[in-house]
Structures are given as structure tokens and as C-alpha cells.
Length: 197
Image 1: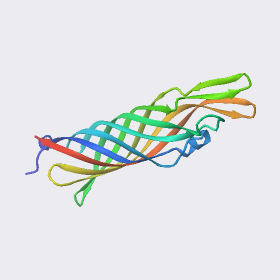
Image 2: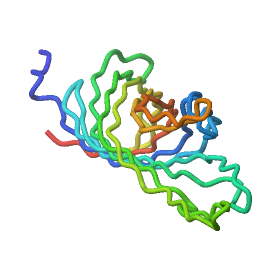
Image 3: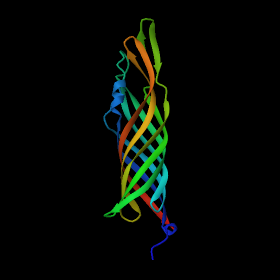
Image 4: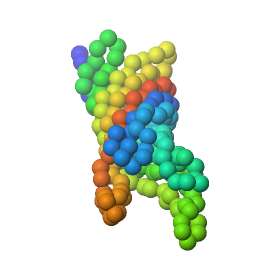
């Protein structure tokens, strides 16, 4: 007879992540590079039947051109996110499981260098790039299949969204606003899986 849903094995997994993230093309308007960058992280999930949830840490980065005489050409923007992750299985085929996924959490941006000197008519002025923390959320699709013993291989594609306070020049005025941005990520996961009933 078929097993009841609550008799399905429960499992927990601990995985390492690697892949790339492509920033929003609109960030190029603020001198950010919008080319894909390497990313890495870790993920822990708990599952029962077709559902799973857990936490994920992900780190990537990009460069922002400064265009200031006497300062470095760019500052490195490091992006670190910590997110809650939820998955629901959509289908299984040829030993592969397909999931819809959603995530929500916090994004932290840090700059290196985070201070530069800008020459002015009144002498040098120090400009500081303060760290930024924002909410971030997204959704995507993931695919997993078992490897040898208790190991699993995964592939995930995700689109995430966040907002930033921005400032740009319009004629002689500086316009400040809050704008929405996003990124695309493709991640591989190798995870150790432990099951129990």
C-alpha cells in the first residue's frame, strides 16, 4: 500500500555553493559593472516530502568606477546576503527533482576602498562610502539529483530584487531617489544529505 505522507523520510542537508551573479544592467548608470561575477556560499535545508526550507549565505561582488582624479579607478563592492529559503517540488524525472523556490533576507554592501580623497578648490575633501544594508527577496527554479552514497548535486537559477537610495546629476541639480534593482544568479550545490523517519 502507498505510504502516508507523514511516513516519508525527513532529511537535512548541508551544502556548499558556487556560481555567478549578474548585477542589474541599470546599475551601469551609476558606474557599477554589470558583468557576471563569481559567487560562493553555503546552504542548510530541512525537508519533508515535497517541501523544504532553510537558510542560505551568498557572497559575490562587482566594481564601481569612481572617475575621480587622484583616487583609485574603481572601488570593489562586496555583496553578502543571508536569506531564508523555501522550496516546493514540482516534478520528478529521470532521477532529477525540479523545485520552485523563493527567498527573502538581508543584503549587505561594503566598499573597498571605502574612503577616498577628492581634490577641490578649497583643498582635499575625504569622501566615505558607508556600508549599505537592504532587504532582498527573489524566486527561481532548482534541480537536484543524487550522487554517490548520501551526496546530492543541485543547480539553481534565481532572480532577486532589492532597492537602493541613489543620487545622480540632472543638469546642475543632484537628484536623489530610491530605485529598485535586481540580479540573476546561477548556482551549483554539492550537499551532504542525512535522512531519518
